[in-house]
Each structure stands twice: as structure tokens, then as C-alpha cells.
Image (cartoon, rainbow, N blue to C red; front, side):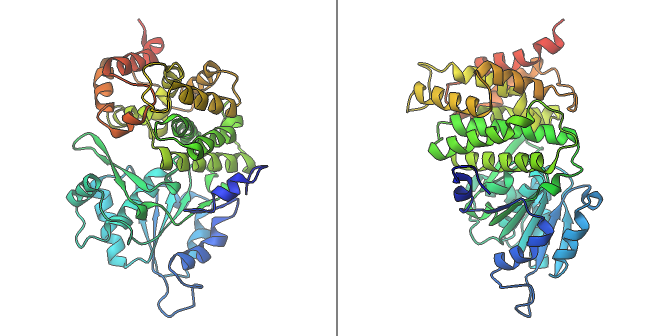
Length: 405
């Protein structure tokens, strides 16, 4: 797999090992054996014990039976993760990993499934994982390097969870998004199988595409961005370009492959550079207004793109405003747009796709969302300085045209 200059193939040799354009059921047995440090499923009397984490609707997908049959050669335990990761769901799954004495965790699903599997693998090192220990681990950056290895099979494009060394956990009781981080959370292998997207609802696809665009741009303009993350972000945008202006139904294998690859490269970009203020604002939009993560990120992306492109003396990047403007210009060109405004318009149209739920009126809540966003470290990665007043204006402007009286 690669581009004309071969750079994708080179980049994808580092962790996680990434295999694309294959049927997951045909390679997963070998990958589990390799992850467990064995030569094959029957190379030793005690074969690797596998926990497979899946989401809702797994059994309804055409590819689920071949995958189960392949993993059936190992002692297998299947656990369902039905929604967003919470301290409670992560603690429960960590107990399952311990009880099964899992050697390998295989996460088959979207970002929530993969993040739950990653976090539970890491927390299974604790003797008695509880919701409270999950929260403390997020605060203390717990040791994760000895966690069972994770193999990630994304069934949605765009979350990038199969490429990152962190997991998002939603603490609804406190209305906060938490992040568990550490090298043990990065999957050892990611399998990008276009067939795993077959049957994905259009709303999920569009939301994930918005997440890819947000991560690609943020990975390019972040104050922590470097040459690698800028290139990864721009390449993710290039892979997404042909998907922006078309209905996301009836996609062929090539388009599904492009969507998965774009999301994976964008995930690699934010693993280096971190996300920025779009993600910081998205957390309240998800927790209090019910937007999916990708939709929440994409809703503010066009406004933040325009704002960051105008960076000047208020630059927060020590390398200066020209660096930021150049990174944004390269990303815009990669996305096939001839101006910042052209790309912003395409993003806005996608965020208002009829496949997605209506955008809620957030004008009354904008000051609170803005204030909460600035409490997240992600906001500090933004290349142009932000204040509560600036973020409030950006948020208010998003829905003014929808709800103006």
C-alpha cells in the first residue's frame, strides 16, 4: 500500500503495524499468534487466549461469521460494548480481560469499541479495576506498557483510534471527557479492511468523515505539529477529497479503502500533534447536546479553519504565524480546494448533510461550551489564541442562520 512516492508504505511500517486492503478474517489468526508471541495457533499446547470486543449490530454484519470462525481456533470470549466508553464500562471489561486471562485483545468496531478495548486492556493490569481506578488512571497517566497487546479492526472510518496511544472515556457524572494515555494503548496491529464498512449507515459514515477532516487539519496546524504530522494530515485530506461532495451510499471498495486510509493517517497525525480547539469544543456538544463525536468536531471546523487562517500577532505557535498559514494552505490544496473559504464551505455543507440529525440551537449554551473547552489541554494546541468571547462568537455564528428569528 502506498502513494506514488511510496511514503505511505514507509510510514505504515512503524507502530502500529498496518495492513490494508485485505479481508480481516484471512489474516487475523496469524496476527493474533504473532501478537501473542507464537508462530501459529497450534504451535503450543496453551494457545493464546483472545478477548474480542464488538459493538451493537456485530452479528448482523456479513463479515462477522467468517471473523468468528477464524478466531474460533483460539480460546475466545466475545464481549459487547454498546455505547460510549465510561469508567463503568471500562472497569467491567477490564475484569473480563482478567477473568479470561486474555493474551490478546481484538477490538472490532468504531472508536468507542476500540477505545474501550484499549483502556480495558491497560486497566486489566490492576488487581481490582473499578470505575474510580479508571478515573484516577486518566489523571495519573498509569503504567500501560505491560498491557495485553491489542489488534484493532475499525468498522468505521475516521476515528483514528486504531493508530493512537490514548483512549477517550466519558465521565457523564461529572460532565467531562477523560483521556487515558500510554504506549500500551497503541494497538500492535491495525487491519484496514474495506469490507468491514459494508452496511455502515450513511449518518455514521458522514460523521466519521467529518472526524477525519478535523483530525487532518488539526494535525497540520497544531502548535505541536511537525513535518510528519503536517504530511499525514494533508495526505488524509487528499484521500478524503473525492468523498466530500458525494452521497455516502453505495460506495465501492476503492472509496471505502480511501475513507479507512484517510481516517488512519489522520489518527497518526493527531498521535503526534494532538487535537486542538475543535475537539475541545466537541466534548460538551457530545455530552450535553447528543451529537456524535465526528459531527461535534465537524460542526465547528469550518469556523475554526477561517479563524486560524487569519492568524497574525495573536499566534500561539512559537514558530510564528507564517508557519501556521503555510501549513493551512498546504492542507487546503491537498483537500482539492482553491481557497480556505472553498474548503470551509464544503465542510459546512457536509456538517449539514441530510443524513445527519438537525443541528441543535446552541446559542444559549455557547458561553458555557466555550468556557469548558478552554479547560481542556487540547485547546492549548490551537495555533491562534482563543478566549471565551472568541469561542462564544464562533459557536453562536454556527447556528444563527438556522435559528435566526
